[in-house]
Length: 151
Image (tube, rainbow, N blue to C red; front, side, top):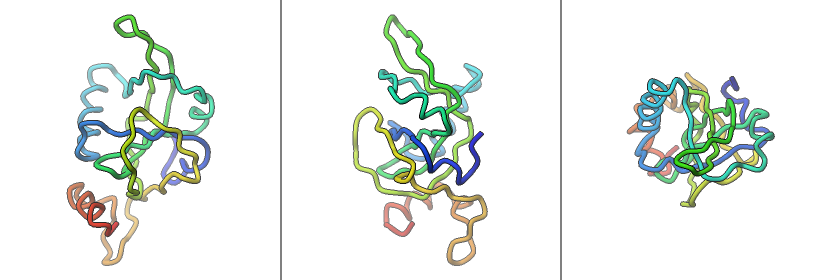
């Protein structure tokens, strides 16, 4: 598993978390998927051509409500056929790592994200002014502060 602060180098994917209003929504959805399938995954129609680079320490970065907010390291990327159609199955580490919020405009599908363009992780216990750790903030508060441009 890639630890906090280790994902920035290399190549990553950027993906909008459709229907998720928070990182907690992603956690709940993926927890259900893990219980029913035994692992966390995301299906996408296009197989990334640079899959080998993604598997060499890459992560999927999730955009929630217009901000990059979290990432998950890739464990595997494989081809699957669902209802007669080919898909890429992105197998993900079940742990979501919070990242520093960064605005991201809307887009469809996924995009490559080069490591030096990826936002840094928020270390658990990392103190902000006033002593509170951003990672320990209630998700709603963190989202509201990002929308106000204060994080």
